[in-house]
Length: 302
Image 1 (cartoon, helix red, strand yellow):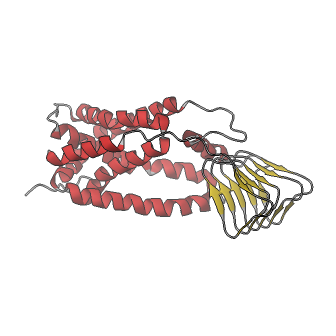
Image 2: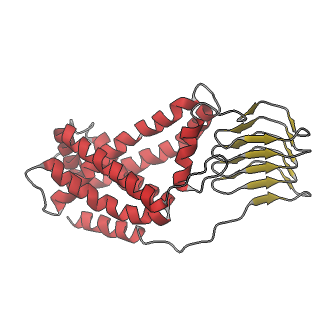
Image 3: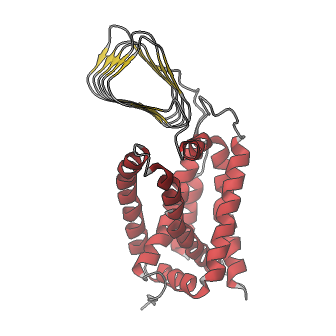
């Protein structure tokens, strides 16, 4: 009980909103500037008037090329504009924002994005949750609405996990009660390993017209273990609070609501922080699920 109280206190401290920062302007490479390497942004436009020897990549920002780029130019959710005199030594790819190419622009590799890429709109739509839309994505939902809808879907799926696998959820909750620290360490380590591997895998799939449609289903499938871990953690939470009811699924839903509700408010201001906290707390349940082999092997306290 004391351990869970400390965990809840740490969670509340982590959920305190951070000071707001002004949106950064475009990342501009001056005409007389040479960047020896790659340039990448998440939610920030890029303007290249000078020289970049490597790749130029932006997840949800537009890219304008007036100078020279030695590698590839990729924008997953923004537009790409190749001005007169632009030179690209690699390929150009825009999943959903479109590519505008001046007749005087030179591209040594392939140019993908002038026509809609299969699956590109779905992948690019995910980016609008965490950043402002650019390019051809014209509709932007309010962040509070997106945050609330995402939390509601997570709540419903967590309740479904508890209802479909009640004994498994109970077994994982028991493992979490018996070995909380090993479960937390294993879960966080697993999440860190996935965070290191997934970007490389996603990049390979995104750059392949065959693998691109598989990217979104893969990302959605990876959420199931975390939702199952959240269900077990929620059940353990209500047990620790003494609110265990005759209907475990209902009690688990109540615990999930207590964990997800603060994330709704955080997600309205800082979606990335809210997502990071979600995976952090769900990793504890995920680690317990791995220790107990999905709840099939209950680890009872000594």
